Amino acid sequence: MANAAKRRLENVPGDFFVDESCIDCDACRWIAPHTFTQAGDQSAVHQQPQSPQQRMAALQALVSCPTASIGATDKATQAQTSRAVATLPRAIDGNVFHCGFHAESSFGAASWLIVRPGGNVLVDSPRFAMPLVKRIEAMGGLHTLFLTHRDDIADHDKWAAHFGCKRVMHADDARGLKIDQTLQGRDQLQLADDLLVIGTPGHTRGSACLLHAKRHLFTGDHLAWSARRGQLIGFRDACWYSWPEQIESMKALQSLSFEWVLPGHGRLHHASAADMATSLARCVEWMEK
Ligand code: SF4
Image (tube, rainbow, N blue to C red; front, side, top):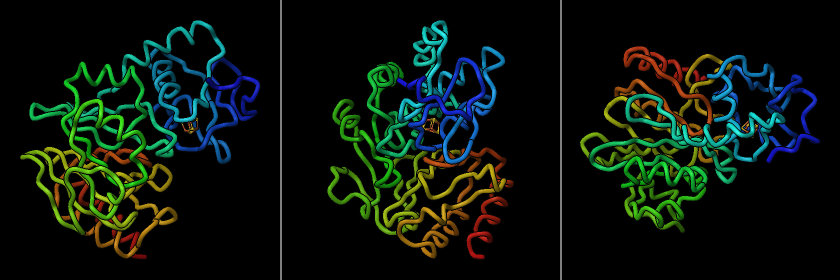
């Protein structure tokens, strides 16, 4: 639980607050932007929720915070937390859900759930929290756990053991892990008619993306929307393997059509396929500067 005695001075007065343990993962700021903002190198409440919808989003951020750095002083708000828990995973687009319950061991990266007749897919690992486990059981369990890269694997062993799902990952990030299916380099691996894994080395040597239904591209830390720049980006300051390789991998994505970018870190982005292609071309241009 967040510690009210360590409430950041940057919070506005009122019920919700962020304490000094925030690791600046950004999750609360895109889950509940009406409530949370960046203040220095941590988050803070810039406005208390103004509506039931904003309150629910703030509670979803509270539940999802990887370090339990968000608190609420009002007893009535605290009592509503279980209602927020029950809303996760939350629908993003059709059968794609944001899991919430971000894990500190993945530095608060987002994870995603695809609910599909051929078997559900979990993209990267949230906390192995029992309320989330129960919800995913009720949504049909897990057939596949796709790991975009080594940094966002969190509790993958627990998820795989509980659901008996197969794990898929790029071979160059899979060393030492129990992975059932791998790919190499910039190879493409067709997991099913609607699931294509694409090797995108750069951020790490074994980064990979997953394209679902030619609509949703799950990108890990390879590609994300930057709210500050207003464009798609790669994380140059957090590129752990090779920036030139990441540029080449970004160019390889230009042969694909998609409408959503769903990253581990950074912001998700939705646009028409044509506008997404334009944004991706601009991103490549920006990376090559
Ligand atoms: S989700 Fe938690 S750790 Fe992440 S920025 Fe918000 S308060 Fe900080």
